[in-house]
Each structure stands twice: as C-alpha cells, then as structure tokens.
Image (cartoon, rainbow, N blue to C red):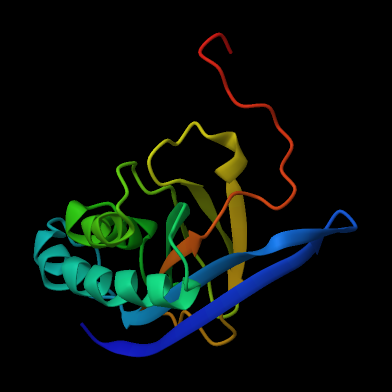
Amino acid sequence: MNVRKIVTTVEEIRTEGGRPVLPAARVAVVAAVIENPWAGRGFVEDLAPGIDATASDVGALLAPAVIEALGAPVEAYGKAAIVGLDGEVEHGSALIHTLRFGDHFRKAAQATTLLPAVEKRGGPGVVFDIPLKHITDATIRSHHQTLEVSIADAPHPDEIVIALAAAAQGRPQQRLAPLTSEQ
C-alpha cells in the first residue's frame, strides 16, 4: 500500500442553536490518500488480490489514528472511499466493504453495528459527507449525523481517499424522541 498522505481533522462544537454545548461535542476524521491498486489497468474482473493487499493495512492504519484524534470514547462512526477519476467507485467499495477493513475500527471502538458509508468518484477537493451512526444500535436517532470533508489536493486521478470518522456523542442539542418499536 502506497500512502501519499494522512489528513486528520478534529472539530469541537461549543455552541449550537445559540446555546452552549456542554460538554463540547467532538468529532474526528482521519483520511489516508492511497494509490488505487487498480488504476490504469482497465476493467479488472477479480478485485480480490488488491483487497487482500490493501484493505486490512489501511484499516489498521486508520482505526487507532481516528480514536486517538477523537480523544474520547467513540459513540458514533462512519467510513468513506473517494476514488480518483481514473478509478471506479467499485474500487473504493472493494476496500471499505470488507471485514478486513472495518473490523479494525469495530474492535477498537468496541462496536457491533455495520459502519455506514459513502463512496463516490471525484477530483481533488471534492466534498463528501460521511454518515455516522451509533456504534452498537444503528436505530438510535440522536447519533445520526454527517461530517463534511474535503482534501484540497486529493484524490489525484490514480488515488483513493479512505476515511474513518468518529464522534464522542450524538448530535449537539438533539431533541428527537427515541425511536420505539411501534414507530
């Protein structure tokens, strides 16, 4: 796996809706800008060798980094794969929709739910939204949130941006009633 750069972003929300957020809400994203293992090869029928060579390594790189950046226990999480223009969306999906990738984050966050995801193709600076859900119960609506991410110089045409996101809480000032079995 060739990594060009790692980008880490941490936000601390202190005010929402004109009211203080106490304690401040923390969210973090760590993204690896990697070489697309299939770029420039035309249509590749069998993606397994690239998955085997890359997915676990990038998961092992990002999972501890996003937890460290968050600096608090993870309550909500998500993932993203943004493929440069010489690749297919399927290339990003192949790397993040495998247990070889996601289990690193689930284990480190003590999570049990599937990681919500976004995957798309775009050029440098493309804006993408990472959906987050609660780590043990995806129906907990207070933790449904989205983080907007952009990396000015990535992805290059032959790259993939792989990102993990984490939140230490639900949305600031959330007021939706809990989802019940009757709903």
